[in-house]
Image (cartoon, rainbow, N blue to C red; front, side, top):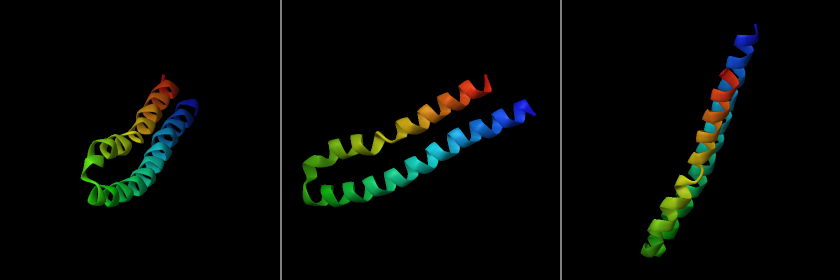
Amino acid sequence: MEISLAGIGAGIAIGLTALATGIAQAKIGSAAVAAIVEKKELLGSMIILIAIPETMVILGFVIAYLILQ
């Protein structure tokens, strides 16, 4: 029973962070495209802003790994 609850906790840790990252990247991506259309020199900073939410998934993976260990 304890192992299955740990698995559920690890799945929630990955699932919720992936969901939140997807929502954040959808909003950031659409705003980034609109900003790049108006100012081409914003491309580099927009790529960085799109990549920042990915760290949430990495942290969720680390938490899931720690739960299962």
